[in-house]
Amino acid sequence: MSTAQALTGSTAANNIHKWMRAWHQGSAPDAIDLDLVRQMLPDTPYGQGVREIKAPMAHGLASCEGMLVRNPQDDSEWGIFFNGKSPAERQRFTIAHELGHFVLHRGQRPSFSCDKESVYSGADRMRDIEREADDFASNLLIPGDLLRDAISERRIDLHILSALAKRFQVSFESLCIRFIKFTPQRAILIYWDNGFAKYEWRSSSAIKTRARIRRTDDPQEPLPETLSADPDIAQEWNGIDMPADVWCPEESSDITLTEFKHTYGARDRVLSLLLLESAAPRSWDLSWQDEESFDCYDKFISNDQLPER
Ligand SMILES: [Zn+2]
Image 1 (cartoon, rainbow, N blue to C red):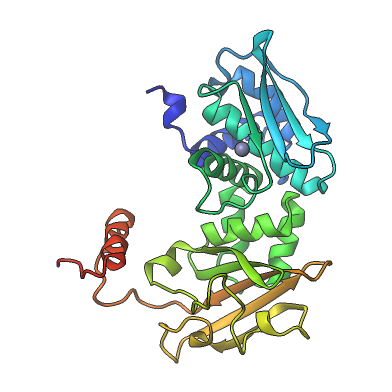
Image 2 (image 1 turned 90 degrees about the horizontal axis):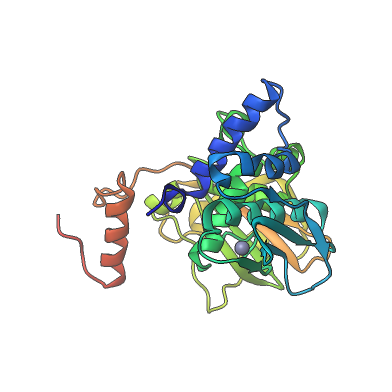
Protein backbone atom coordinates (compact mmCIF):
# COMPACT_ATOMS: atom_id res chain seq x y z
CA MET A 1 0.00 0.00 0.00
CA SER A 2 1.41 3.37 -0.96
CA THR A 3 1.57 6.31 1.39
CA ALA A 4 -1.03 8.14 -0.69
CA GLN A 5 -3.59 5.35 -0.19
CA ALA A 6 -3.16 5.47 3.58
CA LEU A 7 -3.79 9.22 3.72
CA THR A 8 -6.96 10.57 5.26
CA GLY A 9 -8.70 13.70 4.05
CA SER A 10 -7.95 15.63 7.21
CA THR A 11 -4.24 14.70 7.29
CA ALA A 12 -3.78 15.67 3.65
CA ALA A 13 -5.65 18.97 4.12
CA ASN A 14 -3.59 19.81 7.22
CA ASN A 15 -0.35 19.20 5.35
CA ILE A 16 -1.50 21.41 2.48
CA HIS A 17 -2.26 24.15 5.02
CA LYS A 18 1.31 23.88 6.33
CA TRP A 19 2.73 24.23 2.82
CA MET A 20 0.41 27.11 1.96
CA ARG A 21 1.22 28.97 5.15
CA ALA A 22 4.93 28.54 4.52
CA TRP A 23 4.42 29.86 0.99
CA HIS A 24 2.46 32.88 2.28
CA GLN A 25 5.15 33.46 4.94
CA GLY A 26 2.71 34.00 7.79
CA SER A 27 0.13 36.09 5.95
CA ALA A 28 -2.09 33.31 4.57
CA PRO A 29 -5.72 34.40 4.04
CA ASP A 30 -8.38 32.65 6.17
CA ALA A 31 -10.23 31.71 2.97
CA ILE A 32 -7.72 29.38 1.34
CA ASP A 33 -6.69 30.22 -2.24
CA LEU A 34 -7.79 27.07 -4.11
CA ASP A 35 -6.19 28.17 -7.34
CA LEU A 36 -2.84 28.37 -5.61
CA VAL A 37 -3.41 24.89 -4.12
CA ARG A 38 -4.19 23.55 -7.59
CA GLN A 39 -1.03 25.05 -9.08
CA MET A 40 1.14 23.96 -6.17
CA LEU A 41 -0.03 20.35 -5.83
CA PRO A 42 1.98 18.80 -8.72
CA ASP A 43 5.19 20.02 -7.04
CA THR A 44 4.33 18.42 -3.69
CA PRO A 45 4.53 14.78 -2.54
CA TYR A 46 0.76 14.59 -3.31
CA GLY A 47 1.32 15.30 -7.01
CA GLN A 48 3.89 12.67 -7.97
CA GLY A 49 3.88 11.91 -11.68
CA VAL A 50 1.63 14.87 -12.48
CA ARG A 51 2.81 17.88 -14.44
CA GLU A 52 -0.31 20.02 -14.28
CA ILE A 53 -3.85 20.30 -12.96
CA LYS A 54 -5.64 22.51 -15.48
CA ALA A 55 -7.67 25.51 -14.28
CA PRO A 56 -11.21 24.38 -13.29
CA MET A 57 -13.85 24.84 -15.97
CA ALA A 58 -17.62 25.24 -15.66
CA HIS A 59 -19.87 22.65 -17.27
CA GLY A 60 -23.62 22.76 -17.90
CA LEU A 61 -24.65 19.22 -16.88
CA ALA A 62 -27.46 19.46 -14.35
CA SER A 63 -26.94 15.97 -12.91
CA CYS A 64 -23.25 16.43 -12.13
CA GLU A 65 -21.78 18.68 -9.45
CA GLY A 66 -18.13 18.11 -10.27
CA MET A 67 -15.61 15.98 -12.15
CA LEU A 68 -11.93 15.16 -11.98
CA VAL A 69 -10.57 13.74 -15.23
CA ARG A 70 -7.18 12.56 -16.43
CA ASN A 71 -6.28 13.65 -19.95
CA PRO A 72 -6.58 10.43 -22.05
CA GLN A 73 -3.72 11.66 -24.24
CA ASP A 74 -1.44 12.72 -21.41
CA ASP A 75 -1.30 10.81 -18.10
CA SER A 76 0.49 13.68 -16.38
CA GLU A 77 -2.34 16.15 -16.89
CA TRP A 78 -5.61 16.33 -14.93
CA GLY A 79 -8.63 18.61 -15.22
CA ILE A 80 -11.46 19.70 -12.93
CA PHE A 81 -15.01 20.59 -13.99
CA PHE A 82 -17.70 22.14 -11.79
CA ASN A 83 -21.38 23.00 -12.11
CA GLY A 84 -21.36 26.59 -13.35
CA LYS A 85 -24.97 27.09 -12.22
CA SER A 86 -24.30 26.40 -8.54
CA PRO A 87 -23.73 29.23 -6.03
CA ALA A 88 -20.13 30.46 -5.71
CA GLU A 89 -19.52 28.86 -2.28
CA ARG A 90 -20.77 25.55 -3.59
CA GLN A 91 -18.49 25.73 -6.62
CA ARG A 92 -15.62 26.34 -4.23
CA PHE A 93 -16.55 23.28 -2.17
CA THR A 94 -16.89 21.17 -5.32
CA ILE A 95 -13.42 22.19 -6.57
CA ALA A 96 -11.96 21.36 -3.14
CA HIS A 97 -13.80 17.99 -3.24
CA GLU A 98 -12.29 17.20 -6.67
CA LEU A 99 -8.83 18.19 -5.39
CA GLY A 100 -9.53 15.68 -2.62
CA HIS A 101 -10.08 12.93 -5.21
CA PHE A 102 -6.85 14.05 -6.89
CA VAL A 103 -4.80 13.76 -3.69
CA LEU A 104 -6.47 10.67 -2.23
CA HIS A 105 -7.88 8.55 -5.05
CA ARG A 106 -6.41 9.34 -8.47
CA GLY A 107 -4.42 6.08 -8.44
CA GLN A 108 -7.70 4.15 -8.40
CA ARG A 109 -9.30 5.39 -11.64
CA PRO A 110 -8.88 7.90 -14.48
CA SER A 111 -12.03 9.93 -13.82
CA PHE A 112 -14.48 10.84 -11.07
CA SER A 113 -17.99 12.13 -11.60
CA CYS A 114 -19.70 13.44 -8.48
CA ASP A 115 -23.38 14.21 -8.14
CA LYS A 116 -25.07 16.56 -5.68
CA GLU A 117 -25.59 13.80 -3.16
CA SER A 118 -21.94 12.79 -3.12
CA VAL A 119 -20.50 16.28 -2.90
CA TYR A 120 -21.19 18.32 0.16
CA SER A 121 -23.58 16.35 2.33
CA GLY A 122 -21.01 14.35 4.29
CA ALA A 123 -23.81 11.87 4.91
CA ASP A 124 -22.72 8.61 6.46
CA ARG A 125 -24.40 6.49 3.85
CA MET A 126 -22.16 7.83 1.11
CA ARG A 127 -19.50 5.71 -0.47
CA ASP A 128 -16.12 5.87 1.27
CA ILE A 129 -14.28 7.82 -1.41
CA GLU A 130 -17.01 10.45 -1.58
CA ARG A 131 -16.97 10.85 2.19
CA GLU A 132 -13.17 11.11 2.15
CA ALA A 133 -13.22 13.75 -0.58
CA ASP A 134 -15.84 15.69 1.39
CA ASP A 135 -13.74 15.43 4.56
CA PHE A 136 -10.75 16.70 2.63
CA ALA A 137 -12.74 19.65 1.23
CA SER A 138 -14.22 20.50 4.58
CA ASN A 139 -10.84 20.40 6.35
CA LEU A 140 -9.13 22.33 3.55
CA LEU A 141 -11.71 25.12 3.40
CA ILE A 142 -12.26 25.40 7.17
CA PRO A 143 -8.92 24.89 8.94
CA GLY A 144 -9.33 23.14 12.29
CA ASP A 145 -7.01 25.45 14.24
CA LEU A 146 -8.80 28.61 13.08
CA LEU A 147 -12.20 27.04 13.75
CA ARG A 148 -11.13 25.96 17.24
CA ASP A 149 -9.96 29.49 18.09
CA ALA A 150 -13.23 30.92 16.80
CA ILE A 151 -15.62 28.64 18.70
CA SER A 152 -13.75 27.84 21.92
CA GLU A 153 -15.16 29.05 25.22
CA ARG A 154 -18.03 31.07 23.85
CA ARG A 155 -21.74 30.57 23.43
CA ILE A 156 -22.38 29.46 19.88
CA ASP A 157 -25.30 30.79 17.87
CA LEU A 158 -26.14 30.99 14.17
CA HIS A 159 -24.83 34.57 13.93
CA ILE A 160 -21.38 33.27 14.84
CA LEU A 161 -21.58 30.30 12.48
CA SER A 162 -22.83 32.53 9.64
CA ALA A 163 -19.96 35.00 10.16
CA LEU A 164 -17.50 32.08 10.07
CA ALA A 165 -19.02 30.82 6.81
CA LYS A 166 -18.38 34.24 5.26
CA ARG A 167 -14.86 34.36 6.66
CA PHE A 168 -13.94 31.02 5.08
CA GLN A 169 -16.08 31.59 1.94
CA VAL A 170 -18.11 28.45 2.42
CA SER A 171 -21.86 27.96 2.54
CA PHE A 172 -23.65 28.27 5.87
CA GLU A 173 -24.63 24.61 5.59
CA SER A 174 -21.11 23.29 5.06
CA LEU A 175 -19.84 25.43 7.95
CA CYS A 176 -22.53 23.93 10.20
CA ILE A 177 -21.60 20.39 9.13
CA ARG A 178 -17.94 21.08 9.87
CA PHE A 179 -18.89 22.56 13.23
CA ILE A 180 -20.84 19.41 14.14
CA LYS A 181 -17.96 17.12 13.23
CA PHE A 182 -15.50 19.31 15.09
CA THR A 183 -17.14 20.64 18.24
CA PRO A 184 -16.58 19.00 21.63
CA GLN A 185 -20.16 20.06 22.52
CA ARG A 186 -23.10 17.70 22.30
CA ALA A 187 -24.73 18.81 19.08
CA ILE A 188 -27.17 17.51 16.47
CA LEU A 189 -27.79 19.04 13.05
CA ILE A 190 -30.80 18.15 10.93
CA TYR A 191 -31.51 19.19 7.37
CA TRP A 192 -35.21 19.14 6.49
CA ASP A 193 -36.39 19.02 2.92
CA ASN A 194 -40.11 19.57 2.34
CA GLY A 195 -40.91 18.71 5.95
CA PHE A 196 -38.88 15.51 6.19
CA ALA A 197 -35.37 14.94 7.54
CA LYS A 198 -32.97 14.40 4.67
CA TYR A 199 -29.72 14.32 6.64
CA GLU A 200 -28.80 14.16 10.28
CA TRP A 201 -25.37 14.62 11.81
CA ARG A 202 -24.32 14.19 15.46
CA SER A 203 -21.16 15.42 17.14
CA SER A 204 -18.86 12.76 18.57
CA SER A 205 -19.84 13.63 22.15
CA ALA A 206 -23.52 13.38 21.20
CA ILE A 207 -22.83 9.91 19.85
CA LYS A 208 -20.81 8.90 22.91
CA THR A 209 -23.53 10.03 25.31
CA ARG A 210 -26.18 8.47 23.10
CA ALA A 211 -28.10 11.71 22.54
CA ARG A 212 -30.69 10.85 19.90
CA ILE A 213 -33.84 12.48 18.64
CA ARG A 214 -37.19 10.81 19.03
CA ARG A 215 -38.03 8.79 15.94
CA THR A 216 -41.26 9.33 14.09
CA ASP A 217 -42.40 7.21 11.21
CA ASP A 218 -39.89 6.96 8.42
CA PRO A 219 -39.18 9.49 6.95
CA GLN A 220 -38.51 11.50 10.08
CA GLU A 221 -40.82 14.48 10.68
CA PRO A 222 -40.30 17.50 13.00
CA LEU A 223 -41.34 16.79 16.60
CA PRO A 224 -44.27 18.56 18.29
CA GLU A 225 -43.35 21.53 20.54
CA THR A 226 -40.13 22.20 18.62
CA LEU A 227 -39.23 25.25 16.52
CA SER A 228 -38.68 22.94 13.57
CA ALA A 229 -42.36 22.02 13.62
CA ASP A 230 -43.55 25.64 13.95
CA PRO A 231 -44.40 27.11 10.52
CA ASP A 232 -44.65 30.62 12.02
CA ILE A 233 -40.99 30.70 13.01
CA ALA A 234 -38.70 30.88 9.98
CA GLN A 235 -35.52 31.99 11.72
CA GLU A 236 -34.25 31.58 15.28
CA TRP A 237 -30.59 32.48 15.18
CA ASN A 238 -30.20 33.29 18.88
CA GLY A 239 -31.57 29.93 20.01
CA ILE A 240 -34.44 28.98 22.35
CA ASP A 241 -33.87 26.87 25.46
CA MET A 242 -36.13 23.91 26.19
CA PRO A 243 -35.97 20.64 28.14
CA ALA A 244 -33.76 18.26 26.16
CA ASP A 245 -36.34 15.46 26.32
CA VAL A 246 -38.63 17.46 23.98
CA TRP A 247 -36.23 16.34 21.27
CA CYS A 248 -34.31 13.48 22.84
CA PRO A 249 -36.46 11.11 24.91
CA GLU A 250 -33.48 9.45 26.59
CA GLU A 251 -32.20 12.71 28.08
CA SER A 252 -33.08 13.44 31.71
CA SER A 253 -35.58 16.24 32.21
CA ASP A 254 -33.11 18.58 33.94
CA ILE A 255 -30.88 18.77 30.86
CA THR A 256 -31.38 21.85 28.70
CA LEU A 257 -31.28 21.89 24.92
CA THR A 258 -30.98 25.02 22.77
CA GLU A 259 -32.69 24.85 19.40
CA PHE A 260 -31.69 27.08 16.49
CA LYS A 261 -33.50 27.29 13.17
CA HIS A 262 -32.56 28.59 9.76
CA THR A 263 -35.06 28.55 6.89
CA TYR A 264 -33.74 28.99 3.37
CA GLY A 265 -35.35 31.46 0.99
CA ALA A 266 -37.48 28.84 -0.70
CA ARG A 267 -39.00 27.86 2.70
CA ASP A 268 -39.09 24.19 1.87
CA ARG A 269 -35.61 23.65 3.29
CA VAL A 270 -34.76 24.10 6.95
CA LEU A 271 -31.61 23.57 9.00
CA SER A 272 -32.04 22.80 12.72
CA LEU A 273 -29.16 22.94 15.15
CA LEU A 274 -29.59 21.43 18.61
CA LEU A 275 -26.99 22.12 21.30
CA LEU A 276 -27.32 20.01 24.42
CA GLU A 277 -25.93 20.66 27.86
CA SER A 278 -23.02 18.39 28.60
CA ALA A 279 -23.80 15.11 30.26
CA ALA A 280 -21.70 12.29 31.57
CA PRO A 281 -21.70 9.19 29.44
CA ARG A 282 -24.21 6.68 30.68
CA SER A 283 -22.75 5.11 33.78
CA TRP A 284 -22.95 1.59 32.45
CA ASP A 285 -21.19 2.52 29.25
CA LEU A 286 -17.51 2.36 30.16
CA SER A 287 -16.32 2.18 26.61
CA TRP A 288 -17.10 5.78 25.64
CA GLN A 289 -13.53 7.00 25.73
CA ASP A 290 -12.52 4.66 22.98
CA GLU A 291 -14.20 5.15 19.62
CA GLU A 292 -13.45 1.62 18.49
CA SER A 293 -14.87 -0.14 21.50
CA PHE A 294 -17.83 2.22 21.39
CA ASP A 295 -18.59 0.98 17.91
CA CYS A 296 -18.55 -2.56 19.26
CA TYR A 297 -20.93 -1.47 21.95
CA ASP A 298 -23.32 -0.01 19.39
CA LYS A 299 -23.24 -3.30 17.54
CA PHE A 300 -24.18 -5.14 20.73
CA ILE A 301 -27.12 -2.85 21.26
CA SER A 302 -28.33 -3.31 17.73
CA ASN A 303 -28.35 -7.06 18.33
CA ASP A 304 -30.32 -6.51 21.54
CA GLN A 305 -27.46 -7.92 23.55
CA LEU A 306 -25.83 -6.35 26.54
CA PRO A 307 -22.08 -5.87 26.37
CA GLU A 308 -19.89 -8.07 28.50
CA ARG A 309 -18.17 -6.12 31.21
ZN1 LIG B 1 -16.62 12.90 -5.51
